[in-house]
Image (cartoon, rainbow over all chains, first blue to last red; front, side):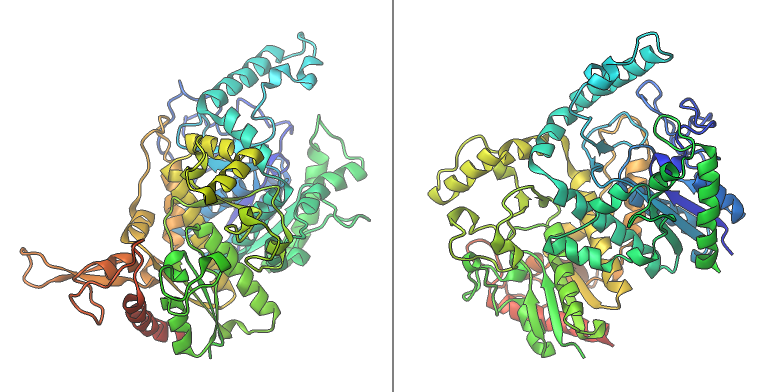
Length: 300
Length: 307
């Protein structure tokens, strides 16, 4: 019987833009661990240093709805914009904590919606001023000041939250610059490319697959969008080897005509309602139904 | 029955400074501990070790060879993997150029690849090394061309920035993850393996390093994450070389677990050459006798693993 569900993913698993996704909804006790940690209160943040706070995943997300259907405790480690490396790191850590707390491997179920391979992370030698410090998320936006970006310039200043969004982005840019990450990430993108991204993500996925299988922990893998799968495609001798060991055939594929159909593709094709870039409640509810049918087969 | 041995490591597994090694041509030594163990097992040997490279390199090549062997219809129980882990400070990155054909085929070097690439067995995989970050061209002619090429491609600037933002936790985390990855990969496929290490500090550091300074937010996250990963690695099953620690406070000498290099360079090791130092080469690599005796010790350990 499954007693604990651990979910990993990005904003699509976190449940971004769902009604209960409130940016201010961080842990009221100030504990760093938003993920309903099994361990409970631990080291307190220095709030004066904190730019962001870890936030709880939405209770309306597909991930939480599947956990509810399984009648199991749920730990959602998903976070918007983070990488496959982030997902694997936190899932392994939560499994370790769960096993420390006398959960048996057969009582744990892991579900992951893999994200885009272009997202990376790096452990750095200083405090990132984020809850997940010293792991620093690397993406193409890091080198720039987004308040000067074309997309932000188009947003009228009288738009709700304009000033706070502006200030938050600018503060983040200044912190990144002070950390040396603006310069580093600029150089990083000059020398790395798509094969690098593919290799890193394939390795992360294979590592988690093997980690779960060697401990007989049941799991379900799926993906956000067809571009995730294109990113995992391979024609290099090292990536080919990794690719061949990943059990893609066992992954959950959303119904549809395309070769690769992720949650986002499926929700768009079926005209579910979206907020700015994420599907809303109905898509999550129906996804949970679909995924639960698969999960029932896996855990029986 | 073991039919294929796949070895991973750095110069200590490659057999640097042994009489028959030819690093320039990608030919590892048949006198290395790794090869001698494979001979004792009566098995074909693939030595993926390469001087100066990282634990990431080791895992990448060992996995590639295991994958190839399984495709070539070797059964998992016919494959044995032996790895001597290297220093944590070595890193690599897959870059978006230098994808020369000679790398795709897996051969170390092909005619016409040019002098710059002779030292790069894997051209798209760039070895991150503090020397790369130097602003000055090296004096030695052979390295000048490499440095100029690194500068032109942008590696010099990249590596400079890399060393500014990363530190010991970066190195520590990357190696722990590589080791756990390979352990899980092999166990999940029922491939038998033996892990050991070049230097005592490698295992000590992997097991006990606690990097907390410099993280002002007082989060427990870094070491929580690292501890979780570290505890999943089966360090107790690794092969340790041993040295006697004479301590006047103790009536009997104590045995200390050490790496291959420490064992070979200490006079109080427990190898067959008791109390004599093994000969080391000018670049500090153990020579033939040390490799021979290491192979005997490791083979004993392997006999237990195979049962």
